[in-house]
Amino acid sequence: MSCQDHEVTCCAIDCGIAGKTVQDCVESQWVVFNQTPLTIYLTEEFVSGSGTVEVVSATPDLTELTITFSLYGSEVTHFTLANKQSLSFTVVGFDTIALQGNATDPLESAAGRFFLTVRYQIF
Image (cartoon, rainbow, N blue to C red):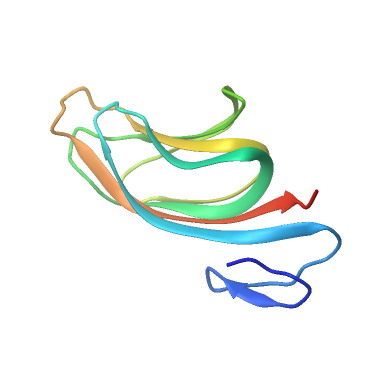
């Protein structure tokens, strides 16, 4: 769903539009296993966005989950969450969001939800 010259509700957030930007909403569930990185958002554009990442459940040895925002393969910023924690964020200038657990055992995992309202320029 995108916002044009009028207001639309995205991810249950009212998103009026001003100027020459477009706003879209992404919602998904995710599962991460051990230390295997999982890309949860990827675009071919330079974007900014606000959203949340929530860890709903994790096995005992997966004690941390790192959320990394990157631009052209270089880290912009990262955050770390534990089981049952959530993060609200606004990040400017990224093209990829990835999750990675800290457990070494391949049977360890974490699951959660991801919501992103992304903004990008109209060319």
